Amino acid sequence: MKNLFILVAVISVIAVSYKTIDTSSKGDGNIKLSDAITIEGIALNPEGIEFNKNNNTFFLSSLNAAPIIKVNLDGTYKSFTSGEKFPLSTAGLQIDYKRNRLLVAGFNGTELMDKDPVTKGTAYLRVYNLETGVIEQDINLSSLAPDANAYFANDIAVDNDGNVYISDWYARVIYKVDLDGNPSIFWNNKTGIPSGPNGLDFHSDGYLLVSILSVNDKGLYADYGLVKIPVNDPKSAKIVNILNSGFTGFDGMVINSKGNVIGVTNDGTSPGGNMLIELSGKNDWDSAEVINSKRITASTTVAVTPDNKYYVINQDFSNNFAKTWTIEQIEF
Image 1: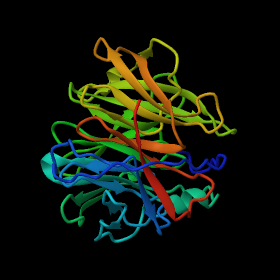
Image 2 (image 1 turned 60 degrees about the vertical axis):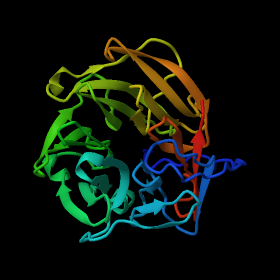
Image 3 (image 1 turned 90 degrees about the vertical axis):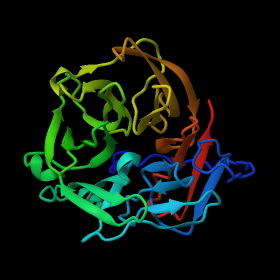
């Protein structure tokens, strides 16, 4: 989930082929998805992507404060979310299948771009019905951190009990919202790495894995790491020791069914480049090592299907109002 103030070079266009779309196995995770799905005619500026295994569609969020759209496998789409009292830019998405919810990280992108230090933006958790797209809860989070310089609700995760965790990259905190809608500050970064939390996901063993990073004045990642945060004892959070080379910090990230972390690096022309990287944890994620990496077109995050197929939403940081976007499958 890239810093809105950093523009990188125009991404190159890549040629992709298409596989036959087989919809005979809906919901079982074995559907044959296309190598790429092109969405045309909408200035969405999608930042987050989520795959819905219930009907084999994708959700895309919108930095431009458009409704979240539902994308079919042939690239057709329709607006999905409705019922909000006011529009917000949206970033990370998370489906909570058990409770029939689409969880969304919302923020005020317009205020973040106006260069007025008085307007600091805002951070929200928006909860939608997974079947209808109608909003069910709209929870202000930024009021919990009144002294923050700015707010950017970035990524989102849900634990076994239905508690929702939202990273705020600019406020440098992680919020928690319980099932009753009560918000609180869950975690402040005390690791010694002076960065904000960005991508995150919940590990079924009871902890969050969180990417922390900063972006320097050249648009490159700086002060990055991966943090393990037990949900029952956030004060015991610690940096995951990366045992080999190749980890260059993550924007968006997910945990696959094997328990590995798949993350996106989008440093443009930096040594990290635009990469999809897979980390395997050791000793219950006290440490980890890079086991796969592949160069990709610039992207912000990744979605994973039940059978561990990875899809990124190709980004064009030079044109926020482009009207053609591509969901691309990446294979290591």
